[in-house]
Image 1 (cartoon, rainbow, N blue to C red):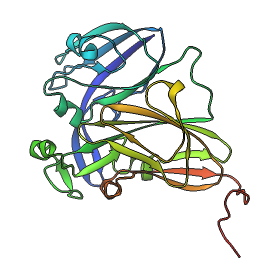
Image 2: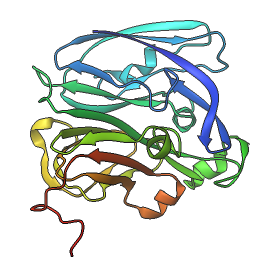
Image 3: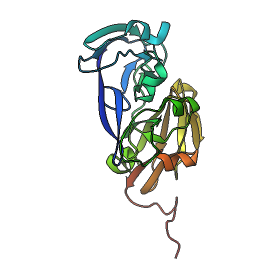
Image 4: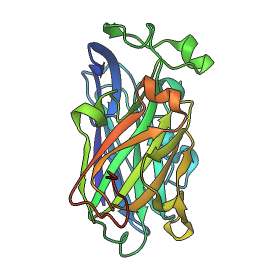
Length: 280
């Protein structure tokens, strides 16, 4: 299995009318989701174009070795490095930049997920979604228009102005809401990049059939809300019984007002034996 990830430093929208300088794996927050099978030998190349201003590396929590690969993947602008590792442990894991200071690189958006699947792969579901939460420390307050710069004092105090799912306040509400149908099975890979604060993942109106952090064999059944610490990924599986709009939230609910929200739109027919939307 071979992967090439190119680091991109660019300015993009964080909220309506608010921009931020993102450092990214592959141009997006989160970076691309990597999927391998346990026992695979993985070759990963990290590319840092000359157009970037900063050095970077990659630490994969799925890698067994010092620094998770970070020690041997330092790339200055114009360089590339390749590492090879064997995926030894099934589960979903974070990867992130660990170049000094690593917390700053994560705060700029440099994180993603790698799924090490069991032999034969994960059981088939109808739809899969990839969501990662992060927090953002800007010089201005939430809602300030124009360009915002990173504020280190707020980051040290763990006082973010924004929380996002997938790098934009509107990513999963207005821009790219999740879509599914009644009767379908759904798997959500939900991680937290951080750098400081975990997420309390909940979907209003649904119960997760299975949740696991680490091995799929050690899942928890019938879970409502699940804490995902910074630097971790959990997997959530559920079946959809009724149509409607379901909200994805961090159940530390004031964070919803700072952007930690998404939408799952489900189409199909009502099943009155499960839920009756109107009583005459």
